Structure formats: C-alpha cells, structure tokens
Length: 283
Image (cartoon, rainbow, N blue to C red; front, top):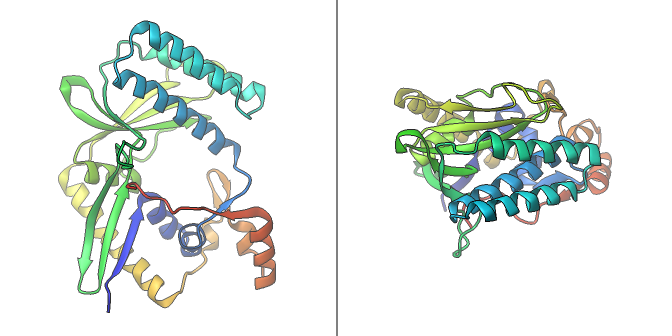
C-alpha cells in the first residue's frame, strides 16, 4: 500500500481544528465563495501594494524611482473595484505607511512571489511527520524575509485591520513560520482608520523559544494524524460552534445548514466555485 501523503499549511490546520467539515469543503473540495468579502478584498489589495513596494526596495530602486512607484501604486489602489471612499482610505494609508517607515532598519531579502524557476521565493515545504503508512508535509509562505536591527533575519507578515488588535503570537501560522523558516518573525500591522494614531503603523515581534516550538510540533502531529484518519474514513464532523467567526458567518454556512444533498448542490452551484489549483507554497 502506497503511503498517504498529507500536505498541509497553517490555515488548513486551523480550519480542521475549528470544524472538520470546513476543512473538507475548503481543502478537499477546493470550494471558495464567488463573492469575496470586503475585508479580504482590502487585504489582498494591501498585500499586492506591499509586495510591489518591498520588491522595488529589494531591487535597489533609487529614491526617484521609489517616489514614482509610490505614485503608481497609489493610482492602482484608486483604480481598484473598491468603492472610492474605501479605496481613498487605503491610498492614504499607503502613502503614510511609506513616509512612516522611511529610513527603517529593514533590508528585504525575499518578497512573496515566484522566481524564474516557478518556486515561491519565501515559501518552505518540509517533512513534518512520518510513519510506516503516511507522511506529512508542512508548507508556508511569509510575505517577506528581511534583515532588521543588528542584521538579524526575520520573516514578516503584513496584516491590515479595521481596528487595532494584536494577533496571538503562538497561532499555527506564526509558530509554523518560525519552525519552517528557522527564524523569528514580525507582524507588520496597518490599521485602516480615518485618522492615524500611535497604533496605526506598528510591528509585533514573534519569537517563541525552542520548547514552545517543540510543544507546538508534538501537539500538531496529533492533529495531522486525526486529519489522516478523517481522510481514510471519509468522515468530517460539522462543528456548529465555529459557524460564526470574528469576520462574520463562515463562508460555508449556507451549505452546511441545508438538510439534503439537493439543497447543498444548489447552494454550491449558485454561490461557490472550485479553485483551479490547491494552495501550495512551492510550485
């Protein structure tokens, strides 16, 4: 019998821990909503702006070229499909972001995106666990890798917010990045508020110690073995306690509340689409 190979990332792991059916619909069935929530649209736009900005800095743009690029990125934000009021706020935040962090001790080493060989420049894909009949590959891709103060390397993850709140430093995403990249990290926050304050542009260091990382690895191995068991048995339990998230109702709520297959099929066809490719840190 060929060994089962489970490839997983922190988001899929968190989905399974929250609700097994959410994992099945999102990861196995590869479903995503046709209509994207505003928060995700804003986040995607911000990440694209950050990628262009730091890639230019990585390539050694002169001050004059960076100034022109800043205007170009700002124009692309205003030309997006977002309502003008929302796009204008993101435009304002981007311009202020560049000014706020001007002269910072941060030198980009790699920016998320594919290199000439089709491999993600910041991604990792590592053997996480194995047994006689299975292997688990853990993947991840931070937004940026850079040297900061004291020439120390960090992974960096950009987070845009509607209100200031710190993320949990020991979440699956951040400990996985630290484990996979072998370096501490920084969460790069930008808050989309009308009037900037001392929390609008800030960074949070993520530096779990070795014992904390090892504890996360051992606990996560239990979870990945549960996922393998669910796959083998084709059994994924719905957890109603996770239908409401901090971002609103779960994407899949309209599917899960249907009481028959015809209803589920109709919701899937009308409101969802299949991703062409599954998520992968490496291409």
